[in-house]
Length: 200
Image 1 (cartoon, helix red, strand yellow):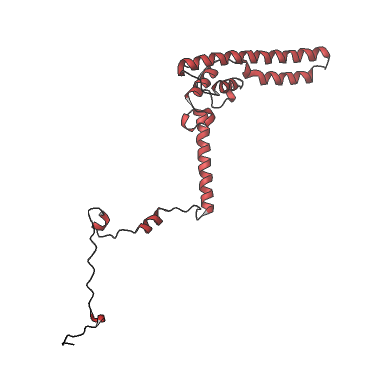
Image 2 (cartoon, helix red, strand yellow):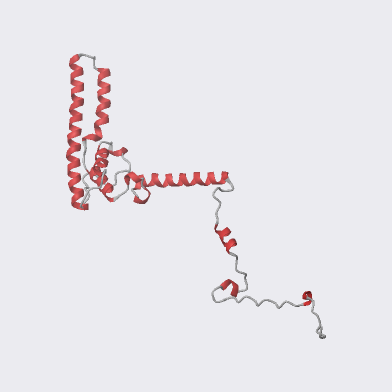
């Protein structure tokens, strides 16, 4: 009214917002001139697909991995390499039990041969009452001898394990006893000691 010029609001210039200060000391990528990826971009980069895109390739890779693991396990059963042995054979106490059993002579090693011989005798010898009594009598004598031998072996093995390790882990005595019932050349893992080479 007093000569003051009216200003159109659209003509007002908006002052530019101050540039956001960037702490380049904390962001080496920004310091190099590379824009810092957003948080969303970083999260997307860290994500991995739960289902592989190429199922056929995934199956082939899994099959090859299983074959390689089985191959390592077979080699370990031949060489006694602890790292690749099956879980049932791992551990220092089981290694000691294997060496102790393999170093001794066990009647149980030959029980299957005696059983096979008895089957052959029952076929060859005429089935009379006396022959049957003799054959099965020999069989039960062998079974009793194997049981007694395995019992003495397990007792001695337990004493040796306690003397060396202080205690016996569960299942180790049974593990050694079952191994003593197997023919030496068919045992897995294969024997690493000769007869008479008892572990210390």
